[in-house]
Image (cartoon, rainbow, N blue to C red):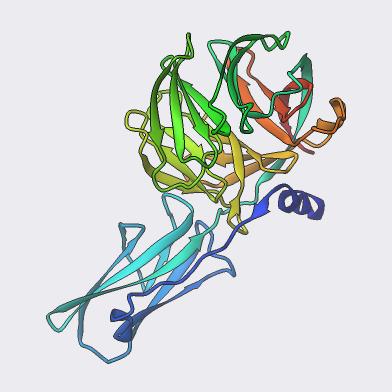
Length: 350
């Protein structure tokens, strides 16, 4: 058990926890004190809320909200059942003496259970372009598409995964560092790293159809989408995975990636499968399995050993690139400047 806990911590990169906030003027009148039935605030915990009335105002009523959703207290307590995990704002609107005041406190809601640890079994090994600095990998109609990075050599490719042959390819302008891709309705959506800009291409011709700018996120890392095409998920290296409107490409919402003990960051290349997001962890030989609705990290895949099976050379870089083939129901993984790509199945580590 202790070994698995060590694996989880070593495979993930810890981000910041949480912070407190109160309206500066209204907190002179009221403030919130929150206590939990455990040391960490986890989904399913019972939280006790105490409103401090600093000036002894005559209070008529109090309304509480968590992340904009009203909650009802029993004996000043409630069972935590947040729609999403991560940093959430708990607000109290106080009605007193004909006036209204709102005070708030940020809490970090963690997952209720620790992630399970998974490993892999290699089904097949295929050739991969050793010069490809892989950033995105996705199957569409049983065909593999890949995006590569680094300024001056960034590209979008259609690949015969069995032979490694490049069937179609376009190069990005030398000013762009290519990042992740996803494909919806015969359109390829591709990110760039720090330019704050992405591109939309025709799947068949690779002709550029459009471009889009990032909104709240600062960088582009990985992309994936739901099977119905109604949501695009975008990572940016932080603890957030942004949810984009596929029509406007506006970042409308986000989830935060958390375990039962902390908030984590560095989700890189993404793949959506059956309500879960599989995400390479930047600079780690591992991948997170994330609940796409709540952000809970429900699993960690130990991919150690794969890098040892590829050609060792000066430009060899980290594991990156994970794609699910719905036809074979297997995953394909590779890395930056790896000469091989591996078809694998995922299984729980015993």
